[in-house]
Length: 175
Image (cartoon, rainbow, N blue to C red):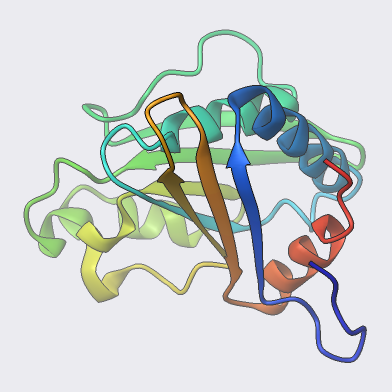
C-alpha cells in the first residue's frame, strides 16, 4: 500500500501472513520504535477471535524490542509489566488481556484504567471488554485467520497521529 505524503496512511494490510513473516515485520517495527522512546509510547489494541494470534503478535513484538525471559499471556493476571531499554531511554510496557472481564466496571476496579492511561507501550487484547473506558488506540491491530494452515491477515488502523507515523514507517515494508 502506498501513501500520499499529504495524507498519511490510516490503514495498512498485511495479507496471508505466516508466523515467520509476521515476526520479521514486527522486528522492523521494533527497530523503528527502538530509535526513539517517544515513538514507543503507544496504545495498541489487538482484535480477533480466540486463537487468531493476538498473544503471538505481542510476544514477537516484545521479543523484538529486547524483552528477555518468559513473555506470558496475561489472561489470568489481566496485565503483565515489562521494561523496554530503547536507544534513548527506558520505557515501561504493559500487556493486558481483558478477555475475562464481564463488565466494563471490572476494568476500573482492577486498576487497569490508570495503568494503561500512563506512559509506555500498552498492548491490550480484547479492548472491547473495557467498553468506552479505554482511550482511542493509537494503533488497532486486527488478526484474521485465513485458512487452517496458520495464515492470517493483519490489518492495522491508525487512531492518532502517532499511529499514522507507525503506519507511514511500515508502508514501504518489502516483505
